[in-house]
Amino acid sequence: MSARIYNRIAVFRAEARMSRKDLAEKVGVNPQTIGFLERGDYNPSLELALRVAQVFKVPIEVLFSFKPFPSVAQTLLEQENRNALSG
Amino acid sequence: MPYQGDPIAEKLDKVAGIVGAATGLTRLQRRFNSGRTVRFRFTPLVLLVLASAGLWLQIAHPDSAAFLAIMTVWMISGTVQAFSPIGNLRGAKQLDERETALVRSGHSIGLLAALGVAVLGCLAFGMASIAEQVRLPSFWRPEVGTDWFALAFFLLAIEANVATLAASAKLPEDLEDEEDE
Image (cartoon, rainbow over all chains, first blue to last red):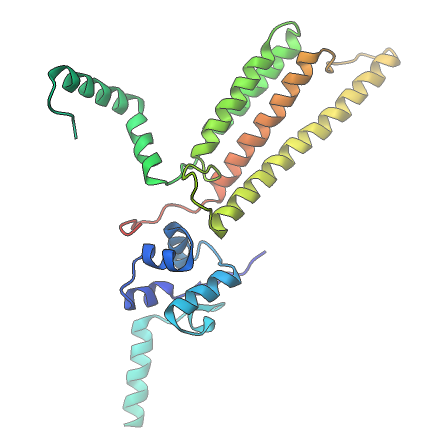
């Protein structure tokens, strides 16, 4: 039995303005695999996860987690609240 | 785009287009060119039924060449498998880790199914042999060469079709946005 692994590859890919095909070519997989990975239909091997993290130049735990990532809107809202409290 | 130029070639092109659309060959060719695989849910089941019918024919008429029918079913199964998630229509393209895992798990399940049928068959044939020795009502067991051929192709057909079914079931649904694939 394998646990669900959440990821935010789609967010990083959009930020980098990279297509699935571009990312797939960089990490050496089929573009369909990147799509399934983003959708959570496929759990990557450690090697593939490290390669994806290497492309975006971030630590692996920034991209993958056992817990769902907060949405971008939620993160921004929390940041705004923190800024309001401190300033 | 239809061909334009020679009138005879234009008409032949139109006929080819109509035949392609009616038989689904055009759709299949587009799918083939896109490199995407087809999820088979019913075709392997139909082929398994046909292989079983061929074996039944071999049992009922040992002198017939029913094993050739089972062999044909197995060959068709192989063709179907080429379009399935475990087929490699992209030729020289190397499979990635997800595709490799899918091929391995599909064939593992197919081989387990064929092995299960082979083990049960061997036990049944052994019991049939013992029943005959002690003069109890017996049942069919392979005797002539064509019986063995039929069984071999039957097991191959089971492996191919169960593997196709398993891989098709394991392949996630298509992505909604395939714009950049």
